[in-house]
Amino acid sequence: MKLFHSPSSPFVRKVMACVILRGLEGRVELVATNAHASPDALLGANPLSKVPALLTDEGMAIFDSPVICEYLDGLGDAAPLFPAGPKRIAALVMQALADGMMDAAVARRMNDALPQDDGRKAFSARQKAAVDRALATLEASPPQGLSDIGAISVACALGYLDFRFAHEPWRAAHPKLAAWYEGVAAAPAIARTAPPAA
Image 1 (cartoon, helix red, strand yellow):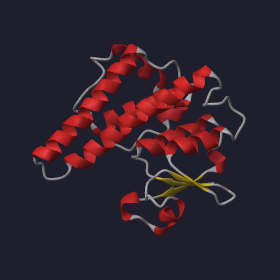
Image 2 (cartoon, helix red, strand yellow):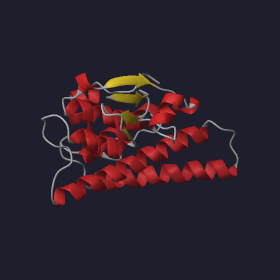
Image 3 (cartoon, one colour):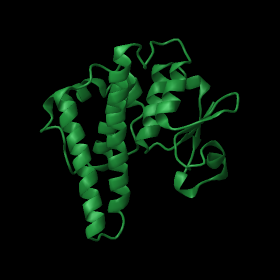
Image 4 (spheres, helix red, strand yellow):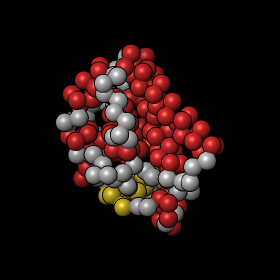
């Protein structure tokens, strides 16, 4: 399998965490990719020109991160990351919340790099407010361990906040979430997928 990869993407990190947890590292070739340059190889795997994108051994192109992670969950012999029954919906909702945090944080970072007018300032404020609400929701009911796709996604979202918005610390206002994150940050799937130093 080939994974179009950028180490700074929190969505790529989520896929890589699943690769590690499923014991699939030896089966995935990482293809360093600048999605902003829209290279032909990436466009062949994802016409949206976004990472992550996965090419299976059979040549099937799979995107985006929730779909890739679910595909990977069907491979390997480790415990499933997508639970069955009622727990599945809870895990998927938590994944959606975390993915929304990542979407908002990535959009805000890109927007903040542009010349700022009132419209762009309002856009950034809206994205920050979405992240703040998600943090409050997670503080009220933090993940348990690192055993499902929801928890993995939350860990990657929090890691992205630390990576790109370290000047806006979130831990003091969210002590239960911070304690959970501290407990899972050293797990190989999280520690070994950390983004490069900013």
